[in-house]
Length: 95
Image (cartoon, rainbow, N blue to C red; front, side, top):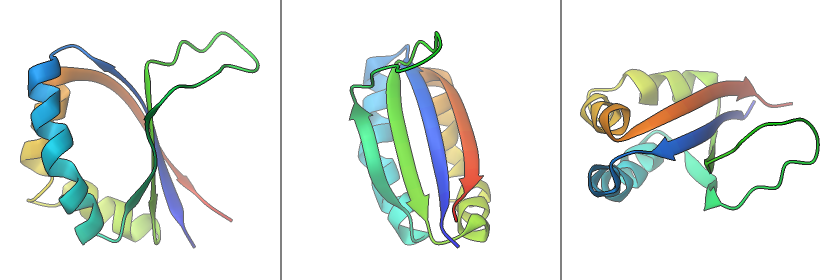
């Protein structure tokens, strides 16, 4: 069953985030993931959510997301993202 990572990202260091953005797609793909949304504008239809940069990733299943998240390939990139942006990320299992 597919699993999705939804992200709302506020970039605080564009140069560092650009390095993350260049390197992370290959790591995501190595774990079967792909971008569905990457930085596209978002329109709030209800509520007061203040989205910054929206990202949606699709993986084959929850296990693939967790393998990606904890992988030695992603850990240094995650550290770059954590320094270069404020992020809210959630994992949701699909139907």
